[in-house]
Image (cartoon, rainbow, N blue to C red):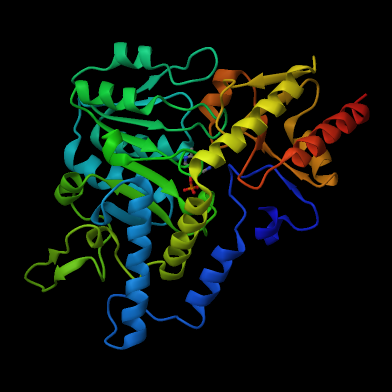
Length: 392
Ligand code: PMP
């Protein structure tokens, strides 16, 4: 598989896939072709090339819908997961939430699933509650069950933690939210590239993710929302393509998903996302998950044997291992590893409340992708050994 990824040439040990995945040649080729030979705008042109481009763009939407188990008209293309969550906060949130209502988040959320809700709270007077974690770093759904009340109108949780790799018991989270009449949004950034998903079977209300973590391009992501919820949501950004009819007497809006895609969309990126979905589907998420799980187990086993390493997160993490090396700042570790051709992430991973909970300013994080293998783990372990020598 590694040969499919030009970004991994020269034996680079890329262990930062949770930040962004390397791209297979098939995705790069799809982008080049869409931006070159096939390029034209969508939804407007009367000429054949534009009609073909429109078809390719809408085919990408269909591929995404099939991949996640949703309907085509439930897939809104956004700039990424961040924009998808902001869209929900500023349309559904502003229209449906008022002072006295509550939102339940968790300690391990990425900033993009915290800050949009805080901004909404500042405008509406909505209160935010934070569900704690279990000792091994999962969202504690027993605690959530005890906390949830009819005042909760929304539960918004990470399906997989970008720091700890902990996997949410999503079906239970959905049941708990719905039991009090709340909607549930899942931040699927780290789950979509790792776990098979069926949003309809899961019965969640909103699901957000970014293409660039699914081996696709940056600049595009997905908000999936149930058709009846999308249909009742007011528009967000105004402009071309999202309208039905515009006049100075008043404007009417297009049905979803177009209502939420103002302006010329990320045409090339959408088509390349479709190619990424094809690529991942051909391998299969079951195989990808099994492969990454084996790597996580192998790495955790090695790190656990070292008495100067602290491991964070549960044993059955999905593709992500966060750890600390005693007496070495994660940034120093990351810098020395870089000299060895190993790329890890060191920092707060846009999850500062989680860092506070763990009692550390930062962690070192190794994250796997479908192209990762034992040689990446071996290189990481050699780098840790060298770091230890340097720091005496
Ligand atoms: N949520 C999680 C769990 C993530 O890992 C990320 C990306 N690190 C995001 C949200 C935000 O994604 P993006 O920056 O692509 O919008």
